[in-house]
Image 1 (cartoon, rainbow, N blue to C red):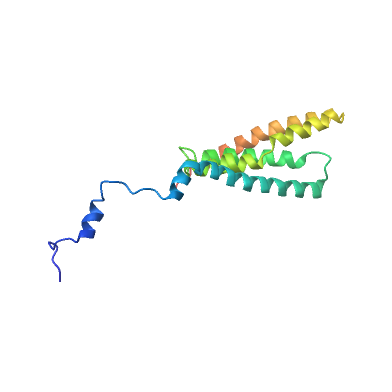
Image 2: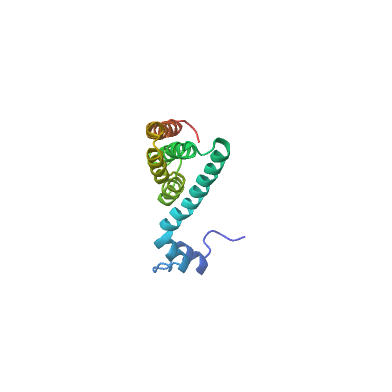
Length: 166
């Protein structure tokens, strides 16, 4: 049986007192530290872009191409997602997310998913085709829908943040 006053090994001493010079990062760590945010946003954009394409295919097959329903849908749901996620993972949020995780979701996924450029083009095409009523309806419903969705998402996540427990 060993007593508690036995000398410690060299490895134990090194574990308690690490060397004074920091360990050099690996080549991958250096790249990740430098370009990680760009990589995270790019990967999120791929996810959001593919989701956007799938929604477009679904809506076109179900509702046709007369009114830009898929663009309206993704912009409203994207507004909800960014409002919900920003509140849920913000400083007072219930979930801990790193800045890079927030960039992945909010800039990457939501940026790749929502389609304000498509909204602009589709609205212009409605105007150019003489369908001013549909263009106005698209603008009105879109803006009201986006603002309402981001507010509901934020409010819902804020409420979740106040729940007790884990």
